[in-house]
Image 1 (cartoon, rainbow, N blue to C red):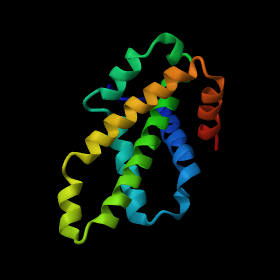
Image 2: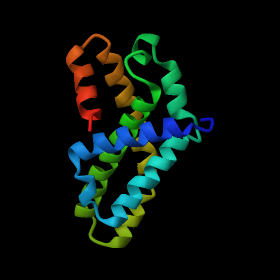
Image 3: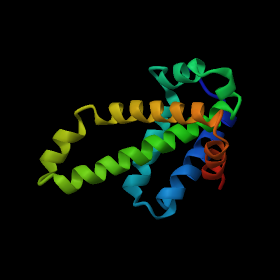
Length: 144
């Protein structure tokens, strides 16, 4: 993705925080998890492989017109964070040792989860074109 404006970045980060905060009280996250969240935000906002940009451009105009790109980007980032948090919790509960956690951690989980999250978000936005309750859910979860 090309360099984003300050306004785009602020909107994306605000929406992402609002959505994630609905599920996980962000103000109560340990410092290490908050740093992980901020790192995820930065990485997915950068969109080095242009996966988000391509998915956005591939959406029908009727879906893109439902909300600004920055808001949808924030929703996607929060969705990826929530999925990653859930899977990390499952791994830590199942793994017997730190070594087992590290081994599972680096087997492409992050990339796979981010890709799945993007597909899920795109599917939801497309559905919101004809499902008013879905669109209202988007708006509700993005609000502070």
